[in-house]
Length: 83
Image 1 (cartoon, rainbow, N blue to C red):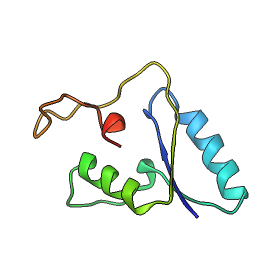
Image 2 (image 1 turned 90 degrees about the vertical axis):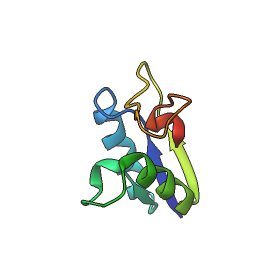
Image 3 (image 1 turned 45 degrees about the vertical axis):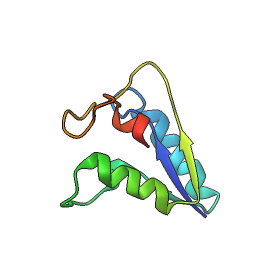
């Protein structure tokens, strides 16, 4: 099973790492944005596409909204909200 792990990054970096490690020890395939290689796609499109390619979405949420792309984003959603 492939899991997409989502959250804001700077404030939850350690939590993401611990949860990803635990999920991988349980033999899940975990997709994390910080492990992306260079791509042509803008981050918001890459992330939402990766969410759709996974079986399960796990979101860690705290106090931050995350990056809000200015282009093509009339609702002013953060990338985390788009996911």
